[in-house]
Amino acid sequence: MKTRFNRLITLQGILICGLLLSNCLWGHEVRPAFLGLEQRNEQTFELVWKRPTQTTTVADITPEFPSHCQLHWTPPAEITADAKVQRGTLRCAAPGLGNAELHITGLNQSLIDVLLRVQWLDGNIQQQLIQRHRPYTSLYKNTSLQTAAYLSLGIEHILEGYDHLLFVAALMLLVTGMWTLLKTITAFTLAHSLTLALATLGLVKVPATPVETLIALSIALLAAEAIQNRRGKPSLTARHPWVIAFGFGLLHGLGFAGALAEIGLPQSDIPMALLLFNVGIELGQLVFISVIWLISLTTKNLSAIQLNRLFYFPAYTIGTVGAFLGIERLVSMFL
Image (cartoon, rainbow, N blue to C red; front, side):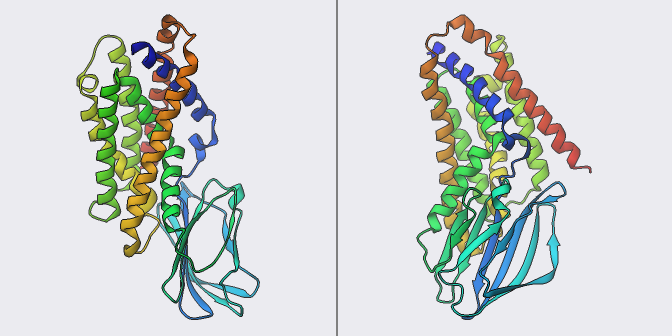
């Protein structure tokens, strides 16, 4: 069992290197843009266009409608710390907007996706995720895509949310048995599900930047605890990792909520969106853990000594990244 976990440690080092070398680590904005259309009559739609901001940068993407539709923006645009929100009116001549094709200009060159919500005059709602590798969709009165949109958003958020994956990887460095790992991951899941629900429903509201800063520092702390435990100096964190996982899971749930609550969905959509988004997060988390386990089967030829020597590489890598992100986000709070 210990040898198997040592193999996991080696694989975590490889996966973490991949994260460090990927664009998502240094610049991928995992919050989606939001395009909302609400039909007022046969020719007119009220439009909301919300793009996430990163420092002072706003994604250079724009919805492009058919030539027989005219979009009139309502000034001024609303600028917040997290997004730029524009509102307007879309008027379409015959044959209207039904069965038309919508393009998001510049999306294929960006690092985000767009969550689309269209409420038709007859009450039907179309919801889906427009992804950067396919920056267009057809508009039609259908509700079948509603579940897939939020499920996909949750899966994408966790798999591209490198700080959350690094935290899970750090937990796997800290635990030393399958039963302990199961309890630890379960505690983390329950905790972030709780605060995700509270924050998304508006019962708890915490500024995003302090939350993201503490999440980064939690990664560095877990990495340091894993190193101390390896050196034969186990702390409360190492002896009862599920307790720490639950505590920090509450914090991570607030971070997950930022990707959903900031979209600005109507209240009627939130319960279903919350459920499916959370299911997507859990599926993505299971994929991450399963990949480590499956690939670990290919490391059987490595000796125990080789695996032991490689322990500190992923631990120090995780700790360094967590500390860097924590300092970077802390500094941004005062700029």
